[in-house]
Image (cartoon, rainbow, N blue to C red):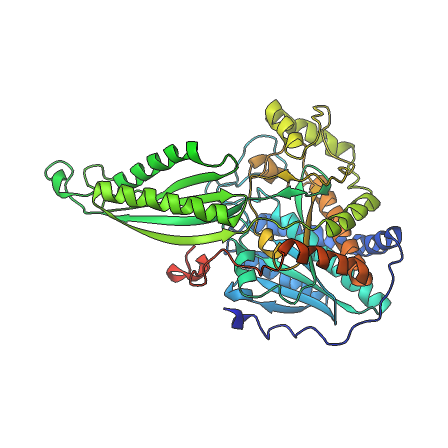
Length: 500
C-alpha cells in the first residue's frame, strides 16, 4: 500500500532554512490571530456546511471535497486518496523542512440527527447522521490554522512546510491507522491536533489501544418445528459466545474493555433455524499487547461456541488503533499558546443557552465531565473560559483514538477546546444541537489560533522541535512503529464492493 503514497507529494527538500529564533509567544499569537480573524467567517460557513452534510466513516465524500476546495482556493497543493482511502487527502503549502502537520477530521455518527439549537431531543430525520463528536469543528479549525500559517509564511518570506491532513473515519474506522500504515506521516517532523470539548487544556490522557473483529458463524438451516434436530443454529452460537464473553469479564484487567454488537441475526423468521449470524467485537486495553492477549481469549470463546453448536466460525479483523504516545515537550508548547490566546470569549447569550441545555443533563453527567479530567467538581460552572493548569500526572482515558497511531510515527500533541456547555456528553444529541451555535464557532476559532501558533513555534524554533523529537525517540526506545492492523486487512471502504 505504501506505493500509493510515495511520490504523490514531493519529498522533503534537501535545503534547510537558516534558523530563526522565536519572537515570543505573544508576538506569535497576535500574528496568527490577525490571520485567523481575517477569514473566520468563511470558515465558520465551512464548518456549518460540514455539520449539515453529516457523513459517516469513509463516506465523507462531500465533506472532504469541501475542505479540499477551500484549501486549494488558498493556494495549497492537494493530494487526494491517501493510503487508497477515497476521502483522505493532504493539503500542503511551502517548501523545505521542517514539515509540520495539522490533523483534521470530518466524519459524523449514525443515528444522531438533531435540530441545531434545540434544547430537547428533536431529530431532523431519525435515520440520518449527526456530528455528535464535533468533527466538523475539529477539521475546520485545522483548515483555519493551516491557512493562517500559510498567510504568515507568505507574508514573511519564511521557509518550512505546513500540511493539513484530511483524515476520514476516526469513528469506528481507524482512518489514521490505515494512513500511518501507508506511510503518510513518514516525512512529518511533528503533528498537532485538538478536539472539541467542554474545557480548554492540553489533553494529558492515556488512551486505550483497541481491535475490532467480526465473528461470522455458519450453521445449517432447517424447519424449527418439523425438523429442528437437522438444523444447527448460528444464532445460538452468537448467543453462547456472548455469554462466554460476559463470564470472562470478571477475569480481565480492570482497565480492559470488551464490547459487542450483533450485526446479523440470520433473519426475522422464528420458525427457521438460522444458518448464519455475525457479531462484532471491540476489545480495548492500555496497550496493543494486552489487546492481543484478550483477543486470543475471545477467539477461544468463539471456537467453543462453534463447537457446542456444531457450527463453524470465521474471524475477520475490521480495524485497530494503538495507545497514545505522549510528548510533554509539545504539550507544554501548546499550553503556552492556550494561555496566551486568552480563551474563546463567550458572551451572555452563550451562557444563557448553556444554562437551558444543562437542564437536560443529570448531576452525575456534569460531575463526571470534571472528574474525567482530574478537576474538582464545580456545579455552578456552566462554561469553561479559562485554561486547565498543566499537569505531568496523566489520566487514563478509557476511550480510544487513531491519533495514537500518528503519535507512534512522529511527535504528536492534542488539546481540548471548549465549544459546549459543561456536562455535554460525547456522542449525544446535546452535542449535535450545540454544533452550529456561536459558542461552538468561538471555540473552533480559538483552537485554530492555538494550532497555528504552535505550528509556527515549531517552524521557527529548531531547538523546540529537536527536543520534541528527542522525547519521541526516548519513549519509542528504539522500537519501530508496528501497525496494529495486519497488512492483509483492507480498509472497510475497499471491502465488499466498497460497502462499509
